[in-house]
Image (cartoon, rainbow, N blue to C red; front, side):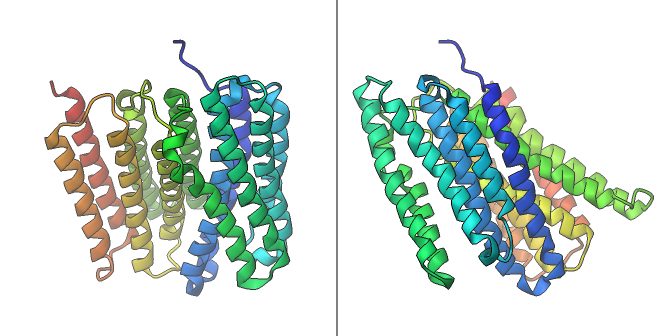
Length: 371
């Protein structure tokens, strides 16, 4: 069977998410102006980035399964891009001011996805696919209606109703994962789409380093910090992308849920790491919080990456490699715990992360070269 490639339309669609991710990350770095609201801003950041990711993920999963059967898909995706732009422009730490446009953007995105399921149903004769389409269409519609009713509430109730609907929207495919196996995804195509989306997130780390260097290219300490940070980014990138095509079994029959939802944690990990790099260079927050953010984001990246590799392998990892992966993961977790009591400069934290990432790369290389 000919390998399916990502289309130019999908790549064009991803462009608006480059801006969306950058916007949410910029809001996260404003915590330097309000250090007393650190945890509140982290929470608001998650409330913005999760709907944004789900807007992308929902369309990606539809296009993976049924995009080739949909007539004139560009019309639907162009409309979705407009709604993504509207939602992105509404990202604001004072959410009440832009709530209406955010809601319109999100509803528009999800409505277009639901409409595509309705449209493609007439073009598909397979009974199993028809059942999956009907299941997703009905549940997604109910979730969207629930989120839409948030407009009639104020304060905490408004956000509770909105995100209850979004949570149900995200949870429905997980709850019905066995039924969705009747319409398996194209793993190769999905892995490539998730890899490209993750690459957009990595772009934010480079943007953070350029912002740090801006106006400080002659300061030795800044150059050293950026140099170490860039080496760490390269090691993180290498640990994921050098193995993505080698490790993942693209021929397996799966509903794609584990692969897709792991990507959410990759997104959160990398964007938090990018923000932590910026915060570490401009040390307004307490060093302990910066260290925790760096360590936690690395631990989350490490865990999500290996979850993807272990559950979608071409061949099983050896027991020795599996033990090493778990052992290194526990060490990173313990280091994160120690940071509740210890305070070190961010540059030393980056050096420790770099060493852990180097060991991670060596473990994976050893597994690949073993007979």
